[in-house]
Amino acid sequence: MTKLFNDPAAFAEEALAGFCDVYADAVRPVPGGAVRRHRPATPKVAVLAGGGSGHYPAFAGFIGPGLVDGAVVGNIFTSPSAQQAYAVAKAADQGSGVVFAYGNYAGDVMNFGLATERLATEGVAVDNVVVTDDIASAAPGESAKRRGIAGDFTVFKVMGAAAEAGASLAEVVRLGRKANSNTRTIGSAFHGCTFPGADAALFTLGGKQMGLGLGIHGEPGLLNMPLPTADQLGRELVARILAETPDGSGQRIAVVLNGLGSTKYEELFVLWGTVAPLLRGAGYALVMPEVGELVTSLDMAAVSLTVTWLDDELEPLWCAPAESPAYKRGNVASQGDPDSWMGPDGSSVDAVSFTASEESRAYAHNCVAALEAAARAVHDAEAVLGDLDAIAGDGDHGRGMVRGIDAAVVAAGIALDLGGGAGTVLAEAGDSWADRAGGTSGVLWGAGLRSFGENLGDVTALTSEMLLEAVKAFAARIRELGKAEPGDKTMVDALVPFTAEFRRQLAEGADVAAAWTAAADQATAAAAATAGLRPRLGRARPLAEKSLGTPDPGATSLAMVLTVMGPHLANTQTLAAAKQ
Image 1 (cartoon, rainbow, N blue to C red):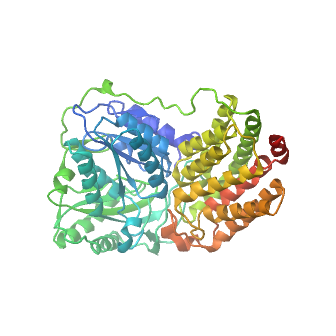
Image 2 (cartoon, helix red, strand yellow):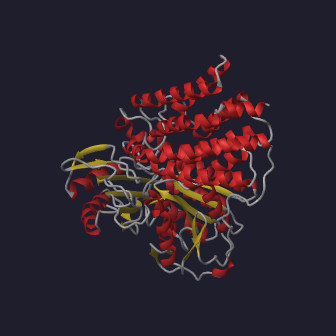
Image 3 (spheres, helix red, strand yellow):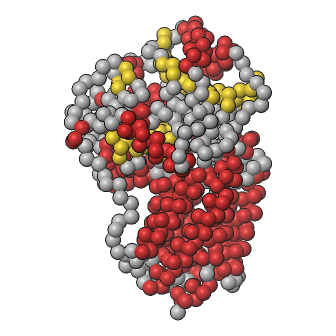
């Protein structure tokens, strides 16, 4: 178990702070993560790795010459927010462009994508490389749907070496994507990891069992099988990797045998005793192999095997010198001036006054009350939501919702005190929710609340028609970003019925409060009905069968939040006062 912590909710921040203090000669903290302490003597492309905490040495442990220039660090197993990615990129950018590299998870794709859009509008040259090495998570013909796991390291290494050598942004991106297309990983888990503060692991395996096809966010394997000997496991992993040898590949490979937290080095060396001869027996030359912990999952007892097929371009980059807190190869060139970095101030809500009508300010109090009610409900349901998410995910949904709603309440209160109307209060709440919660649900809730607020505005007196339009904008933004449809087993399965019922009730002349209550009831029923669905999107998709019988946590939390917000957002007295 993860035993050493203070406040479990602050574990990731405290771990990052401790890391930055220990390695203060090599890294420095910035809002959203950390960057290299020494600016390179010659401006270069900034390679930024990113993802949730809990994977050390990924991602901050790889900051340094020949590897990455910075790391964007989210909460445990939760994608960083778009604001975090933006802030780290601004701190690391040297004028030669920025590239984000991260695993293929919906929250990461959305948040890094939003940060990319914002940077591009400011004139920063920026691109993304998404790692998809996990062969267990999708069929060969659907490789774009695959997760990124320990293959992250080989992709980061290639990109970092290319950037250090002075390659252009386009060239660094091309080489990173080439390395990804040549990389395959398969893993196996023996016992789940335990979140700080949790009293049980995310999953356990009965008897002498092993889960083949693990995820690095604490997800169990996709196929349970009897626990093999090291020799049997080595043969299983090598056979599955070589079955997916890329077309036209050569005979020189980079190999990483990775422990995920509780599998000891001695065990890895025993397993290597089977893996290496099998690969050599298949005609391969193993180029500077790595055995150890490179991409972990807290205290998970698990192992993964990664193979990258090299060529004349990739091999020199794989072998190039690198030096970071957690990884060293060869001798790197001298570094630049540590005092030449300039970073963002990290501020969120600007300390300015807002302009709003008295009617909108009056309704803004209702908005804050609605968020406070949601916070109470989410705190009460945190454990339940986490348990639902742990069935086929990483168990972090409850924690993420708590972080998001708490940040939203604080930001909304600040905006209200500064004179903000309903639109500003909800928009600021949404931005802070996305920034603090991270992950898929964080960015969706954040963007949805911002759209809700933007539709209400700060000037016009509120009407039931405006409330309906705001609800529709909330739903449209979430669907636009998440790309989910009803039946995909996501929050959309509760959101669509809520929106449709609210619209229908108002059209039939129902009181707005009664209409909201009816819509919330529909959302609650729809969320419960997701127990009969198999997930078709997101992190739970590879474990679709295990998800059967369990309601979707995102749909469940959405219905719960909409229910408790109703008495405040659909307050008929406030609406009537706003119309006068």
